[in-house]
Image 1 (tube, rainbow, N blue to C red):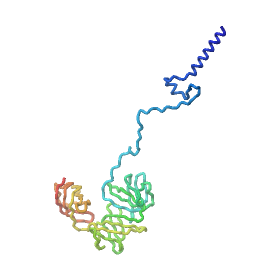
Image 2 (image 1 turned 60 degrees about the vertical axis):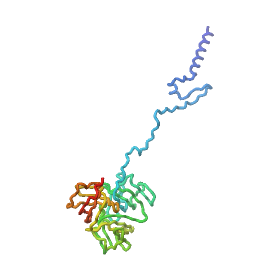
Image 3 (image 1 turned 30 degrees about the vertical axis):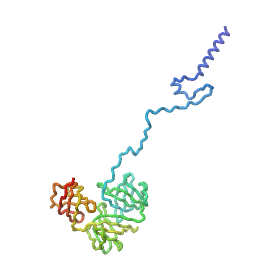
Image 4 (image 1 turned 180 degrees about the horizontal axis):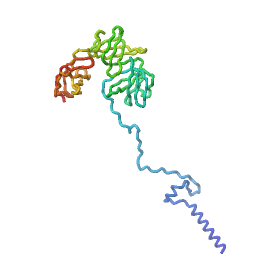
Length: 311
């Protein structure tokens, strides 16, 4: 009996060992999730390869820039080239303070729409540095001055300005111009190499007078002085000018007309004289002929004829 009992106990032990070493059933998800090793038929232990979970949705890759709203296009407005030295650069407010050639300071805004160039090659806004000489192609956007483009370290300092001649000192060879976009006046020197133009034709320097509207191209001597290379006389004080073209904007409250000239395809601001009664057919799109006088800072309409009502 003892021999039979030993045999029975031995059989039970062997059965238990065989059960403990048996591989897990394939359907046992709990064992597959918690076990880090698996037994093979040859008795060796192999690491379990982790199974990557199946994606139910495809990967979504988003460009962070695409999540930002698009900036509006740069307004189409008359541009003015301003030259000076960067006095202060505020990258938080996207604003640069420029010490303008000829005196004064200007705060000019920029943003990712602003194009930057150095020596004819495109650069970035990160290349702006305080103390550097720059030239900015600017427009008036509402009540702020915005830089459409910035030119860094030009070999030859060239600037442009348009405004009214406040002073013309022939004895000193110097003119002072009030630019509509700049809070300070521009002083430039005139010498024997300065060209004077009117209607794209050369005229003597005596044609220039205080109160006339001019466009000035100047260069810097590098010692704080600007020299006029070319002065174009656009309008003389008290002179009569006739504009014919299409009205692109009208504000009868202020008496302002903006006319696209059919002659040179430029836009001109014309103010109606109080004696000129506005016609009910005067609206944007109408084709008109306006006879004006230039009165120092603006063209004032003395008569207006509607040639066509347009659209």
